[in-house]
Length: 381
Image (cartoon, rainbow, N blue to C red; front, side, top):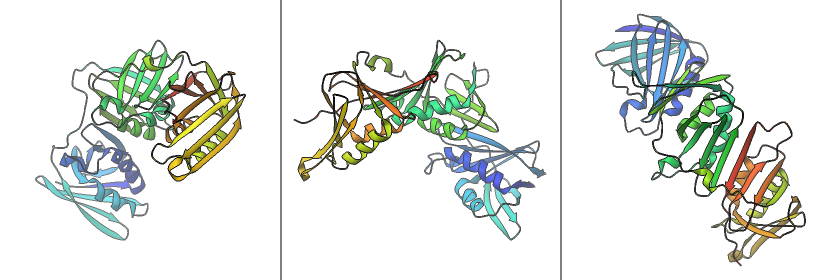
């Protein structure tokens, strides 16, 4: 079979870069090292895949003798070749004999030949025929913001894949996104939605990909199957296998009786933490917070090297009782970096119980909320 495709170099590179986000550097399935090209009715579809899911994007093209044709090209060679070409109409001549052949890329100053594979062994995840599908349509910024707010708090434990995920739950008009590890947990809630109730566990890779590709899109359609999730927006279709199992009851560990509240300027607090953490023990990264009389003292020390640092700042404190509590500076800084308001609220009860961190929202901005749980560290006497 011989044929020809004419397509914009920039368009093709942009689409392949997007679908290439799912391609692993060392795939266990040989065909997943390739891009799948399919041509139907003058539209070129390009697909990248791994064992857990796949992304497809479409491009308008001019084709000759290539209808209902599909072939594979090694993804790294294709991407690297396109990156060094200038923008111009790109002519791709495809010659296939049996299960293999060549694709010749022609532009104004050169010709490049790439091997192609023509067979049906490119495996993809897809919804089963006749499977009951639950369609959900929502504004993409809600999905993107929800994933981005919490995905950094997810675990990376191969033995507990359910923790390497983002829980997305809709219940009684409230949409909740949650990720957690053994040290921190992020909970982002959007109120007064008109979504039906559902509960799905998104793999981390899917969450990262969709939060990048769907950013700036108006709406997104989700199709929830028994084992897979399909997301469709613009010229993009993503199908990914859901993580099986029950997500832990995260609400059971959220403290309800934290009676000491601190409000602090995020920028000042962040700066004090960064500076004092330089002098903290390099193994524990422990910093201590001492709060009393509208004053916060941030301390870090390393007795092994006789180093220490201490900074003070004014805060709003709801209690007259002194509290001293320790945190791993790396984790506390990550929590502060998730706060997108000028002020941060921290609630605590004791030095050995979980603290809650949240933004201080302006009036009228209560349609959503972010709560971060962080476990304390023991302060050596």
